Amino acid sequence: MAILVTDGDQRSTLAVVRSLGRHGLDVIVGEQDNTSLAGVSRYCSEPWRYPSPLENPDGFQQALIDHVHHRSYELLIPMTDVTCALVSEIQTELERQVRIALPAPGVFERSSHKGELMRLAQSLGIPVPPTEFITDLDQIRAIAPGLTYPVVVKSARSRVRQGNGWITGKVRYASNAEELIRVYEALHREMAYPLIQRRIEGDGSGLFALFADSDMKAVFAHRRLREKPPSGGVSVLRESVAADERMIDYSRKLLRALNWNGVAMVEFKIDRVDNTPMLMEVNGRFWGSLQLAIDVGVDFPYLLYRVKCALPVPEVTTYRTGVVSRWFLGDLDHLLAIWFRRRKNLSLPQGHPGRLGSLWNFARACGWSTRSEVWNCNDVRPAIRELRRYFGDLFRGLRRRLT
Image (cartoon, rainbow, N blue to C red):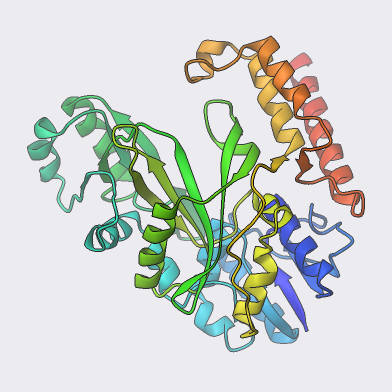
């Protein structure tokens, strides 16, 4: 039997397909377009096209139900927040036909609500940013004058389905009581009762884990070296580092309390005041830099396959640190932003290199010791497809500006 993986245009999906394919497993890759990054990989047995999960979630769910009913699959792996949410909604029905690479029904939903997650973490003694849980709009005007600023106002969920579409959660900042009231009421109109948290100054840090049978089966951590956009966002250059023991302990407590089974990305922010890891959120899906974990010896996709198919799973407690991985085209975007956008519009952190320094750093990462996230000499078609699309989009953008 085969494995069905969604979201073929994600780089993390390409990493999953290569991992499972190298282990001799048949992998079917789903995407809303005829071709995709992972769909052209030599390790993809067959592509499958489905309706857009963003624009037609009902159609996507029905197509998925029909597809697994008529095909024999061993495992279904949803890859993004949207497809994970849609699969979790129909998980009980799908599990009559196929195993699902998500926690038990209801667990994914609970972990996706930041308010519930913060309350659970507090009850377990896991550090979280000081948080205000609002249940009535009148509370805002009462508590606003007494808060310590700046604060963060964030939607309780990253995405919420509304009819046959989606509302995307937002994060805003407020530096005083008047601004907080205005920002909160605006976000509340889009998604009810966002959270208010003290803004934590410090670096973001994540623990990537496979959790099953009430314990960690594998962990991994990396350090972000460059991001797209340069002010912070998607990691384009990163280095494997030893996992923080405190974050392992906190994550173990949290995932055990959630009755977790599967992969998780547990995100923290290290408070500069006392160096404490503060829990931010949990994502029950694979992450963008998955290929680096595989490169250094933590083959999460194959380990997850073994967990979900009730096969023996070895615990992976060590991996190679100091290994650097690069998404080349994302890193190129980082460089172009530095060169062609005004520095004051980039919101760069203090001390960020300028144009020549960024060019030198970009060139230094081109050495043989840097692992490529997409390029693979044994599987070149995904990189070729990515290059064609990238430069095609670039030239089309230039033409629009010139006409």
